[in-house]
Image (cartoon, rainbow, N blue to C red; front, side, top):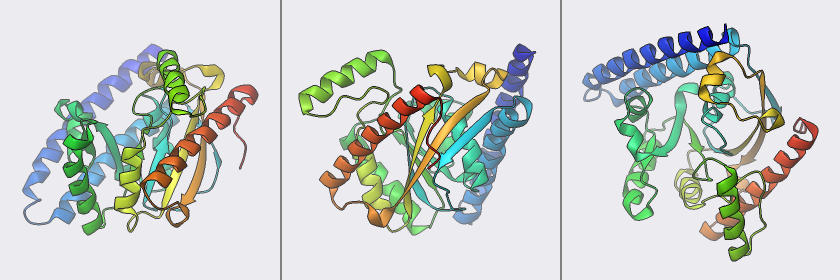
Length: 285
């Protein structure tokens, strides 16, 4: 039965995203006349497809997202910082984004090569996502232009940032330990030391537009990190998501201070995950 669910999910969701790509491409005729309508149309497309992904996980597979921590307001513009362990970290977020009416407003930092990928990659091209080469000299003009567009047009957003820059693995953990010792940082055990540049630029560029930084920490029971296939087959029963909200006005000012703040945040995430793996749950607050 679980294999059937996985096959059906693959057929339905892949077919749907390709149809949505066609609709998104057709929406280009709207752009010269009204960029606002163009964006609303594509926001609706994102809401539909990402919503289907979450509805499948919720209603068909019965996956529970156990959310703890701070309560978030509806439709608040924010920068979201996440730990990254598996590709299914992404659909984990859909449940909360849907509840807060921000599902169609997710803006992701993603690898530049993904813009050539039919389906999700092409779809993100229409959603003000940031396709980066992870080279600041190559990316900075494009990033500033994207942020200027978001600010000037008051584009609703949850700007999603995997600040570690890659997925957490044992091999990367060892390299991160070595780096931490060389730089005088505390070694981390469940997350990697974050790359701070993207976060710092995001905060400094969007401070007048976003109201908060959200810290999302994702925990998988018994260290079991599911694949996308296992997710859509319904083999995952529950995932834990701990939420913290920081007002943008309470963050420190300046590049160096923001970098230190983010590194400290990941130290706290590491402690949260240590407690989660010991107890099987995050604290309620």
